Length: 219
Image (cartoon, rainbow, N blue to C red):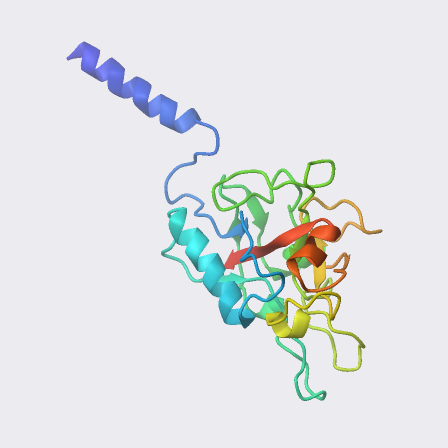
């Protein structure tokens, strides 16, 4: 009996101290960077395709019981009204990464002082995502979004969303990206650092990206 108790105690201790593990249900994952892109440049199949990609990866990681959405904005199609803003799609928080670390308590913190850096902006499996200094650099994350999480106004010239995430054209249009590692691009923005060179997979890779997305649990 004593030996059995010792073995069980050791197993429990191992589980509690293993890297990346936290008490089940204490802080369920509500944020991750996708470990892979869709593979067709910035053509995600629209917002629906981006959301489906997030949901698919979350389910494979054991977090499929939440409502997952991609942090993406769209632009106006009528030239008059504003598009859909990423911040309006992702719920109200709080959001934790796969290791149970707080990313942001609410929308204000997320867009003013989030805990998003290379160490914390993990993929759905709790792994680091390659950034500046890694080969290849994959820190460009598709957002189509301004720093406050809102969509671009119709009078702000240019395509910032690769035709609302339906284009993989080579050298035509662009997508606004952020840097999950908060380095490069002339600023430290996680969600709005610079524009891509185009919408194809090769265009995204040329500036340090792979078509990755930020995914948030909206519930």
